Amino acid sequence: MFQAIDNARHIVLIAHINPDADSLGSASAMYTHLLRLEKKITLFCVTERINPHLAFLPWFDKIRHQFPAKADLAISFDCGAYARLGVEVACPMVNVDHHKSNENYGDVNVIDISAISTTQVLFDAFKREGITINPKMATALYAGLLDDSHSFLSPKTDARTFKMAEELTLAKADTSECADALFHRHSLAALRLKGMMFERMQLLFEARVVVHLVSAQMMAQSGAREVDCEAALEESMGLPHAVFALMLRENRDGTIKGSLRSTGDIDVEQIAKRFGGGGHSHAAGFDVENRPLAELCEEVLNIIKEEFI
Image (cartoon, rainbow, N blue to C red; front, side):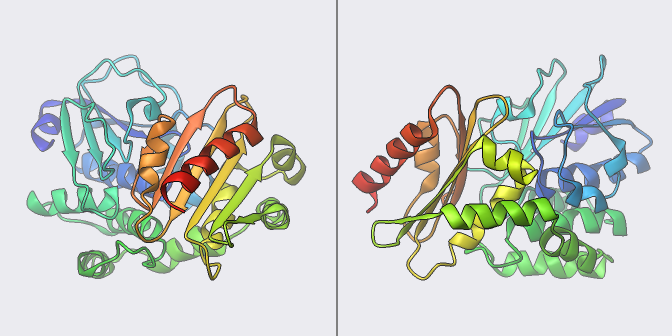
């Protein structure tokens, strides 16, 4: 990766569609490093309505939504599938990720499926190269670590996770700002949507399976953003008997976003793959077109019933 960077003059850093703190944090950290190398940089994300809670990340105001006409190199972050880039990339590409389902679409693929976040993959790469991590980089890297570890509550959290957190704290990461922005700030619209979701939530199979169906009407009535659905989904897994949670959300363009969460031996990535998606064993997702919400829900629940319940 770093040899490709050295040889390039104009580098595009790509955060995936509807970026989270891991994708955008990784891109932000790399942006800081490339500035020190005096490279020409474009920070790109095709999504125009990015979650405003991520505005604390360094260089958020530098994000562009048009891919440049000319570039020597593109680097994607936290994007397991080429389609999630949201753009056709003609120049050579480095693919930095931690998803087991990654399609290895890059000319260079820097993949570590043992890492809890893509920022951890990048952090390790920086360390191997002897690259100094300054406070801006530390904050960006810590944000991705905190978000993907679900504030260090993920089953994948281990000593390596805490060691990275320690080193970034010593590098003067703004840990309190990361925690506040990612977990403590809520819009009124998001709280309205959460109330709707919990009111309509279904508990099936002796309350082991939680189902959230989020209609386009619910999104419009609440005024919430797509990302606001995730909080209720995550909280659902805290129910006493819950081992699996499914959320299906109608998008404005008529597609449906599916999000899956699980505990124990239930590998939701295998379910997501059936619908063209991917992710991790305990957190995965997919997108489908031209399917009624109730019909798709029944299909997913039949898979769960036949294979896991």
